[in-house]
Length: 132
Length: 368
Image (cartoon, rainbow over all chains, first blue to last red; front, side, top):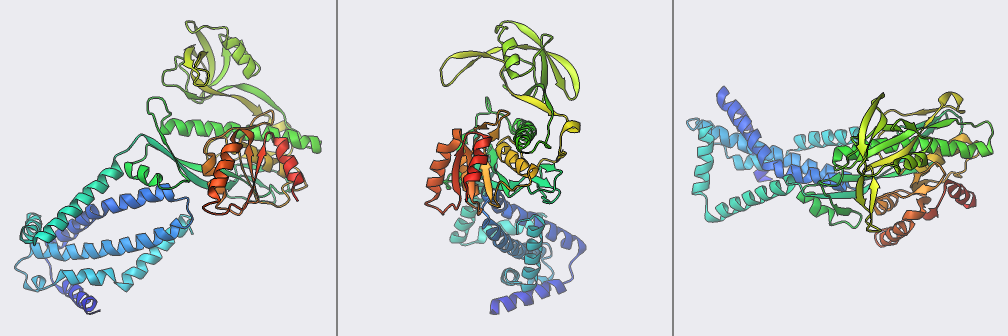
């Protein structure tokens, strides 16, 4: 819980830091790209698994849980890398350098607001696909 | 950008040996997973699929209808069963497919087997003719019980379903052969008789309907080894089917075929015929039971062989069906799969072997 609260604090600090436009765009885009590359094998494995075992009706619940956890992990890594890359780009920014990004991962992994929104979206998509 | 990479490199350089090893291990796992999911292997996988009610009437709506019969009768809870076919799967898919006894994993030979696109074309053509054949069989059977039912149809030609890669016929899937060297024929037997007059060295002309236009193609027969007899036979090197056309104006009650077909292949023919038959009669021959079945329907009413039987039994076991009809040619295979599945879960349906469409009706009449 302490780490989670610390992570929330660190995330808020990051949102409060004034970043240059270039740093902002570059750190975000690079973080998205690197996170996508990191998650690509897992996405491929999951997609191909669904392709073969999609006929099992129980797979839909596995699908929802796995995608949900996957989205939460993706968000955590993305936020972690955004802070890390921003720190690499603005070494002179003291407020930014003071942020401890490892706590951001803990907070984002268990971010209730994002978790609820992600689950609602995934269930909505599953309904649209006629899976539930 | 450079700063980001410098930061990552310096982090790695300064990391403890354990962390370095962990990163390298994760990198190797990453590359390995990418490789096994991207590299394709020459295997095809058949998995269980889903069931579909395929006939609708004025009183029984159905989102997945293939044929709609204009009556107020019930089409019944009659379902075809489909399987999923995955050609040239990834190495990862090949490995996970081997884990389930419900899957059929077989070697795919790109040199001789049909490509995925050719499979789609063939499956669509098969579905189209199976609908026509099911309508004919069902209307003819219903006509015997209710004289108000009528159907008029005629022979249209020989439909080409697939063409071997080494065929010398210049035919294409979807071609409708109407003449050989200018000579017409009235059925498949007539076609075979004329064809037998030509030797493998002779070139002859085939008149075909291609994309709605009449055209002529040159053809020669070829020698194809019969795997069962080990003897060579003179053939065109194409898969064909006797195509019929129904005269809608002279057919009562009216019917409608859905132009947007959601499945392919002829294996639903027998069940489609049963559902159409039920829709044509006031009496519910299905007795309100949930029926699943598989097998093609031939114009003489016989139920033909199909593939993927174990996967179809596994699919049916996922639903609360009362009866599963299977053709004579596939019964042993179906029974074996049925017995095997009993170890995994209890299929609730009764497996019934049928030879003809009238066997299906008799079996339903005998059900309590």
